[in-house]
Image (tube, rainbow, N blue to C red; front, side):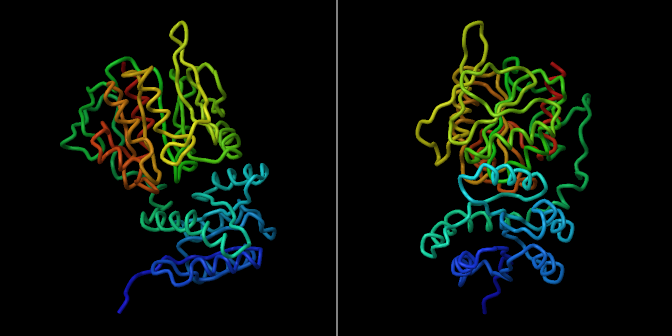
Length: 371
């Protein structure tokens, strides 16, 4: 007798042909069951109020309720539900709106499949099903994330012994890098928008270092993402451009479709370099490219954080940084939507610190402030 508990999927799709694509894609799967396929948001809210779903596919094209209102209402009904937005490709307006919905509580997005059944099936198998499965495996819960941490926040003068704390593996006296920190590096993928919206506002307005970020996101999405992050933060966040001097208290988000590298120019100043060379780990921008470039020019004066994401992008770059004496922080498994990228760094033995998401920036700021 098969006792496998299936992931319950509710699909909102306005296009009749695409509804059939979703149905064909998910039929006979051993771990995913489509509970309902509905054409609008009102019917979906009614469905989940009576029969909870694990994941909702939310069609960008619904008109009976705003995407943000739907997302907030769905999360209010079931705080641990996962919402994936399906958006059209090559549409700037859709990209801007998608970022707003991500900020409202949607955990990720996928591009709409073609209405053609064969092509749509192949795309959904590659893009959609892994995200549904990762989200459900992690049993990610907004209620748990919003609840107070069971681990007390250390005070600036508190000595944190690794033997007595699940938060850190070294004592509070261990420096964050062998040199004086010069830049913060962040790499993130699946679950990244929500993670960045949580942590970037934790930087104080007078933060003394630049921050360089690689988020796996398509080209049209990174500029509105940077603008959304900047509005939510006390530091300025912008989409990086080529040959840009890195300024203290500013965060630079790699543009989709371009690798972001760090280079050092005259007077010892740090600048950006953008390139459209081949993807690394299937990604452009790639965390490995950012981290590896920093290992060459910043060496032990870098602090790198690797956050939630599928795959292992960032593992090789983090190892190169570590060889140069940089300090590496990995997000812990419990607070990650997907513990792929940070888990790979931890398993590789590169992480100096493994922390819950909400403690990473306070830890960095506190430690830099004591230098």
